[in-house]
Length: 134
Image (cartoon, rainbow, N blue to C red; front, side):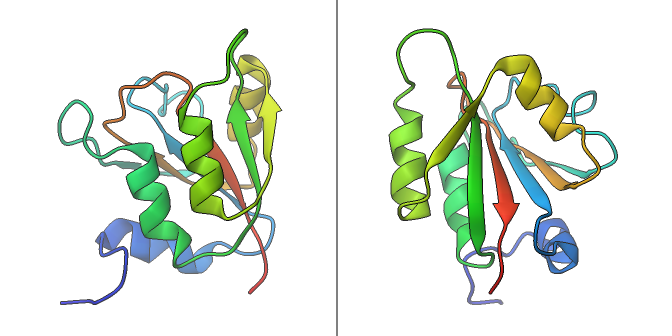
């Protein structure tokens, strides 16, 4: 058995092909993964409503990949609490905000290499990560 933070075979198969500037989407269970991720590899992790959460997946892969940028879908009004969890897990990387349809457009670009759907039930719990250098 592997002793690393992420043991999912499909995620581990795709991550080594992600280079500097490529993007990874970790999406909540409401995100239209099939229609709003272009040609990216798609992985459906949702086991039950709420499991796994986006922060759980982010924590698992952040130990394997360096990120230089993080983008979130911003709602009108109050900032979602999950954004604080993202900041904590990313250790100081600022969150860039994109409006809903701009976020969808960004996730349809060829640079999106991996799209992961979770069981997350909170709204606006999507995060688009740009791979950095080691």
